Length: 232
Image (cartoon, rainbow, N blue to C red):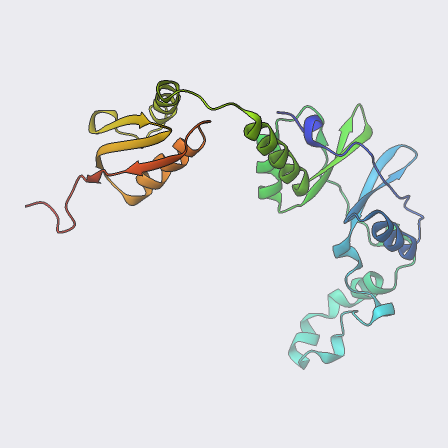
């Protein structure tokens, strides 16, 4: 799956000369948490709720005077920016730049890793230099919900087809021990017997089974390969 398959294609944007108060209204009116900033067709920044958190109009500006004297001493270099953050009139003064953008053909697995490594919640989607969408963590949730609807429409399958599909998945995992475990299926209930090394393996096997269409339940009666008291 690629970014273009889950992104939001309707892009609501602002210009760098848009007023901060207008951007606040834009976020509220459209029920969104951020907007890309575009000038002359070029992506120049992004403004999110976080950029509007500390504002003098609502009494949330960072108050240096309220800090202990030693914190005020070390915060001196931050004071000018704190003032800009809370009093800026134009978006250009508070927008985040440079912007982390992504290509529309990026695999969603890479996108998830990017979000996690950079600690971001959203990114504009760019194709040939133009912003063609925006993708956020919510789009992952929406894609997952859409997948749930498809799964519910899938027909149940036979016990043998469940067993074959489950074994194919289990045998592709490094934690599965084929020679020490046996899998059977009866009336949609998966039965696993044999030995295992850890409780986590039991959970992982159950999760694998629950991903197979037609599975109604899982009964795992495997015993620990090493008794709780250690080797005899």
